[in-house]
Image (cartoon, rainbow, N blue to C red; front, side, top):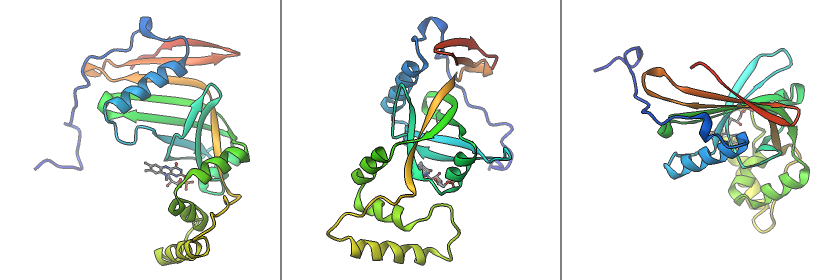
Length: 215
Ligand SMILES: Cc1cc2nc3c(=O)[nH]c(=O)nc-3n(C[C@H](O)[C@H](O)[C@H](O)COP(=O)(O)O)c2cc1C
């Protein structure tokens, strides 16, 4: 049996699908959309899952996965508890990075930029669209706080479900959305023998420039 603790001899072949300058669309958003579509088409589970990296006021980093809920020219949006660890870090330091990794395609995308809160109207609309069970859980859970045990949480959800059996629960004020406005993208395509392709798009005033990075 192989030793799980030592993976130095584990190697995967990433094939030879390339990322060539001649195939690049004019904007990184168009390439993001193409790759997201590919991830979905290739059955990548949770293809909208992205790692969100934040840092506190001292620069101490932290990362967790959230789901991309919508995106457009203005940025990439997700929803969460704004009083959670990530919410507090974003309040202190509104810069973040997003990372998508789609192993079925040997692709990774890094995105970095400034983060802003979405308007309450967006949070209201998305919260109202969620199943009642998710709404009750969001209202009962003060995300990232220490709790005594699971029963505390389940009891709070049960109480809310009873209280709101016939009337929808309002969005808790602390629950909301964020938008990351991208200033930099890096598209990584895994290739054979570690000779991967890396293309970086950087925003300079209103124009995107591209560079190839060494893998
Ligand atoms: C696949 C996946 C999707 C997730 N989606 C979200 C999400 O959209 N919003 C959210 O607040 N947490 C989401 N989480 C939970 C977060 O990773 C994290 O545990 C939570 O947001 C608390 O993070 P924090 O304490 O750093 O603020 C998701 C976790 C996974 C594994």
